[in-house]
Image (cartoon, rainbow, N blue to C red):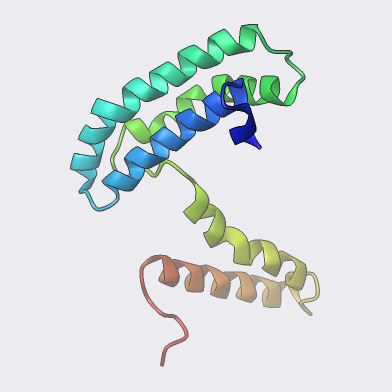
Length: 143
């Protein structure tokens, strides 16, 4: 859909995001120090351009439109959206964190039917151990 509107503001915002993620793909195998340096050289100026563009664009956009809402969100969250520039260990995207909490979201429905509060707590603890093990490269179900 955005490709049909190459010069639209939405496509421009999309292009900024794609450019940042392309830098991150190149930095994937780098050490945190090298990644931080690359971000300072390439991502930081690009992020600054994005926020300058967002300010200019928000002045021309209806505040309650989808684009206006997205721009206002980005401008209000600038400090947090730019935190990845401060440390090479911080990821640009929170997708990994979102995936790691998915079992808890699914489990929440199951915990409603635990027979006792202690049973629900035990289930939550086990989920926590399993997810932590997976995030650390372990295979919790292997014997």
